[in-house]
Length: 446
Image (cartoon, rainbow, N blue to C red; front, side, top):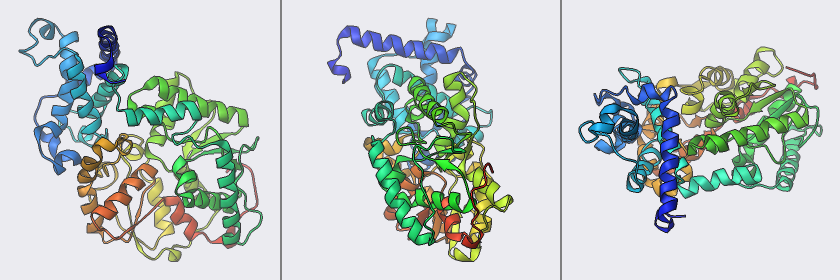
């Protein structure tokens, strides 16, 4: 429902909800960051959006100040007594519309500005407070709301039915058996008592099945006991992007309950930056409960396979030069930095890093739910030019990225900036490099 269609009482209720969301943030650790910015402006050179379009509105500090102005108005004495003097603003419908543009249209929440801030201000945390305010007021961009709605209603962001999951698994399995010359290859669906539940991105079911096929091939070679679920299989959690912690918690609980129902020992996450951050780190906070079983990335599991010799890789099977894009939520926010590199060093012949890399790597431009919001599409692609320049400078023919959202963005950047590269997941490169003579029989836990 548009703001214009709301009754005055409805608008008043939205404002009250926004103020309540701000109040909760003000009583959390976010309050420190809401007070910290000294407006030095040095954050500009760290932000891919500002670098692409260096206007004041794109400076991380300026963006954060839009959220801070509300905090000052309602939670500082100076803001209550002398609001105009200290840059304090009332929460109004117009102010919230401006905040939507700021926190959703000009920021991916990548966090690069925060780790380079001279005083340690976590701009990303402030921007997420802004998203919580917008979400509470019911002003989250409709396209992003729709994705969250699909996850809540149907169990996954693309509303893929359980029957479609089973049929896709069957035909992928047929192709994989022929490719591996092994009729015992399986892609189990809803199998009880397996060791791991493997969460996948719906993109792997709908458009890019090679990632799921590659993971299945690696699992088979390692003799893994695994299954996917037909309903709650989605590794993504768009509640994170929407600033909707209630929905994020519900999505998380659905997966945890599915793992319980299937009786698995561990949940393994496919290559997804925000999925890793959501399920590995944010989930216990959202659900206010300790997990009953481990949650890990497939990257960590593949390293374990290699180190315990359950699989062996032949790097000569991947001769083209490969570079690595570090997803923001996986690396800066999730701390998973080395696993993907350890895999690539044994799986490819010519691995070269981007400059800068690891936690200093630039966002590709597709994060923060930006891919779901078509209204910001041109800004998203323009902000990715610095990533395109990074890729071009490596001379790579293949860009590996352990994140499907990043992969979608990189595919678009590849076309726009004529990079002439191939975008692959890390598991695809490892599968290509498998020494299949080393395939193991099922052997229980890794």
